[in-house]
Image (cartoon, rainbow, N blue to C red; front, side, top):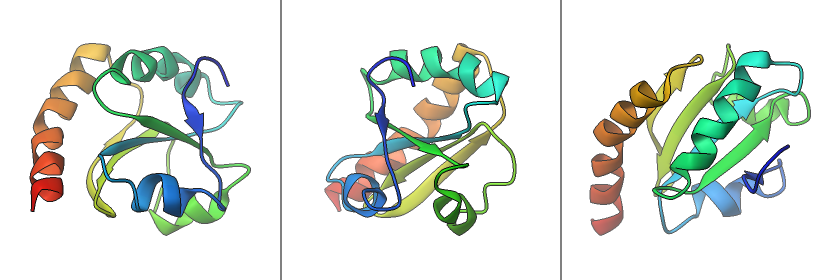
Length: 113
């Protein structure tokens, strides 16, 4: 994994994503997935706005199964233990940013509640 995006595992997903006191963007990926590798720099740049956690679906299939990840890359936004949005497939940065602009306010409302 390149950059400083944090890798979460079966053992750390609960604490780092579900119990986080801030929204977390979760990237479901695999090392053999070229679109996943192309999405990584985009997510790295978005880390200024929201923390990004990566789940390697080959190493942690239970997490991917729990959230019905059928295609990769899949990106989900979590806040207060709830999945607030899902984006499937490689998209241009502008598309990912627009999606994040739509779902992030809902995450912030969840945290303030």
